[in-house]
Image 1 (cartoon, rainbow, N blue to C red):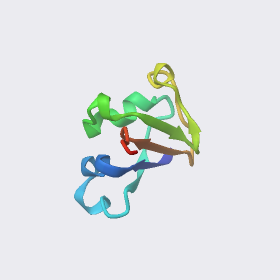
Image 2 (image 1 turned 30 degrees about the horizontal axis):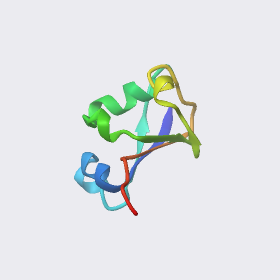
Image 3 (image 1 turned 180 degrees about the vertical axis):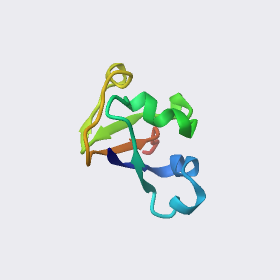
Image 4 (image 1 turned 90 degrees about the horizontal axis):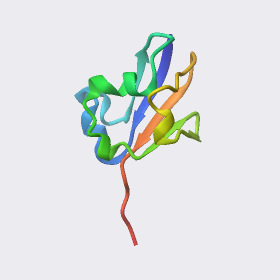
Length: 84
């Protein structure tokens, strides 16, 4: 099944070079794939996986190892953002 995978801010560096300017890519995933399974091949440092959203809905850190997606979902990940 297909989902849209989006990485924001400094995390876009972990996408393939040809996808970085748009910050997103389509992924083919297994129906049983969890968020953790999906992001593993991208080698994202877990300390930078801060805000995780599926279709705009927050997924708590303790739920990411078990949470699966469905066809057409959008998985978006933001790093910690500092500001003031």
